[in-house]
Image (cartoon, rainbow, N blue to C red):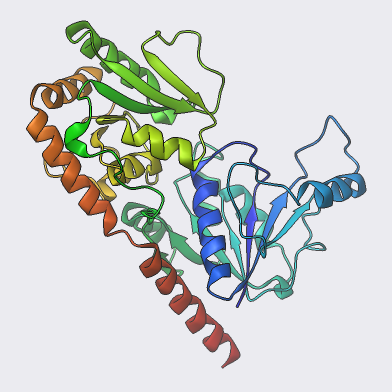
Length: 358
């Protein structure tokens, strides 16, 4: 099959949503399909030029090396184009919109670009107004979601086919290296993100509460921006962490903290669990896809720093419980197989292709 993924723009830094698309692209290519990724550049390089012909030329040059933070299979075709009318899009069997902004563009593409699909990773009201997000679910695309709660939302607004492909975790690259029982229980971990939906101020406030009680606490933290000046010295900050950096960081961490308010899935929480961290998280929609309170994680209400802190302290004070949760967490994530997910996607697409030919 020929499959095209349409991405909003180039991502110069690690991003969870892009990472999932790149994983799908790599694995489909490895299984013998012809994969193309189209990066839209109509909103980038504006300081250089607004001329679309020049942007197209620049895209052909830049496309050889992007993305710098993720290894894409060299056989995958990468196209960077400012043209939204499909002139530089390849002929394909399927084309995937990957965000609400690309759904509008894919909707208008010619039929030669392939059957139109929509890979929905979040309820993206933080990008466009809710009515426009909902409208995108009604374009007549073949809709895919990354979680059951998203499938329920999409299904409430459209009768179009919606298929859940739960986000897998690459357990070949995210795994336990440092034994769970040998980790320093005072070593915490978290993602730093400037998006309000990530709830970072609540996580920092919770850690401050814990630090006042346990002076030995240190925090492994990673993010895209420069190190925030407000971070205390006991935070060890890694900027623009690649997969090897993350593997090391997760394995040097005992308790991973997530204070998200709402999100489609929550990739870092699941990755940390795969690597043997005990997850202390808010009970937002996405995390409930893989975390069960008191079984493989400790969950608390959103926007409640005190409750987060209490759960962190509970694990610091009861290390056997921390180890038990972490072990169960790693086992849970190991069941989220990429092979199963790719096979499911292939089966759905092959069926659609057969129906189209029939």
